[in-house]
Image 1 (cartoon, rainbow, N blue to C red):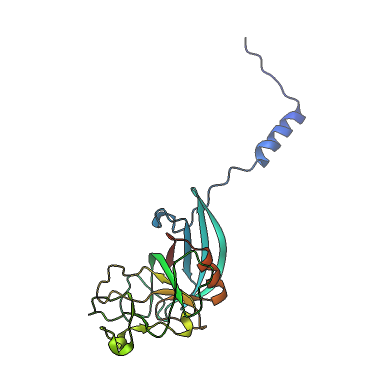
Image 2: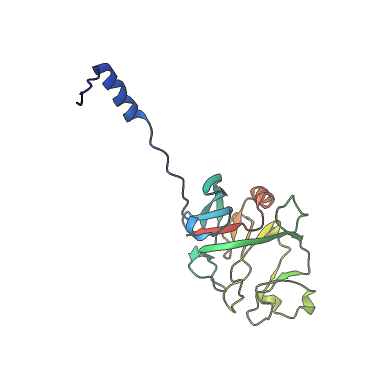
Length: 218
């Protein structure tokens, strides 16, 4: 024989309050790039903010959980904004996910989780599409370089006080773009790189570890 149990009104009210006020379990935060970065645990997420302006959000993954380390860092991208596929001379920053391979700069090495090279007058980034070493770092005196220095970048410039190499066009497809870096800002647009305040960049160079990536969305 079943017996209907009648709860006092006060008890019913208390139960209803608990049910209504207990928050649902929070859904884990899933950033927009989560399905595109593979096993990477450190991500610099670059989001377009109009024209050549952008914001950088910095993320760390622990297990399956993403945590924002820093957000809204002001940055600049190419003078032509963003492009879906990198190409030589476009002056646009390519959308996508790219490795952050090593760091360099005219300044002495800061504390760094990445390999760092201090560059001088004989350090170049080969931008000559017909060169066998296209889109790689090279060292040579200008008169002795086996590639066109007029189409390449001599690395000791103020914007490269500190820089991180982005893995754009790693297959070195001729004309597919070269010399894409995260580097110190001069306050204006770039030729396709991502630039930000040098002090913040130094902190990022110290924080990043091999396997980190940059995710770009214009």
